[in-house]
Length: 108
Image 1: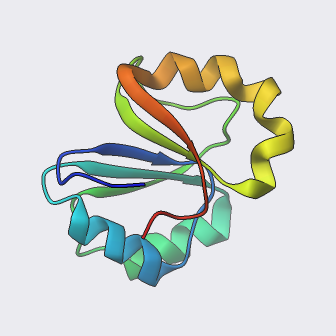
Image 2: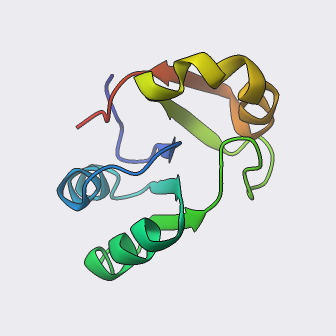
């Protein structure tokens, strides 16, 4: 998967701080939104505080707290493949009309 500097990317699960930082450096005109839980998200927030284009949300893929048709890419990692049918409606809601669902590991 190729990322453009202006992509608006949603990761459905957190990656390592190093991987997220690498994505933040690519998306210099875009944004990276990462969903996750509690301590993991709080830890990543502290680790990535220098990045204004990385947002870490305590949320799950079935209830994404974001406006409709925003993301140009949504990354669905292998561990969520089996739950994809249950969250597909929510993913479509936040995916831009020209956007794409990417079944992949973290695209660094």
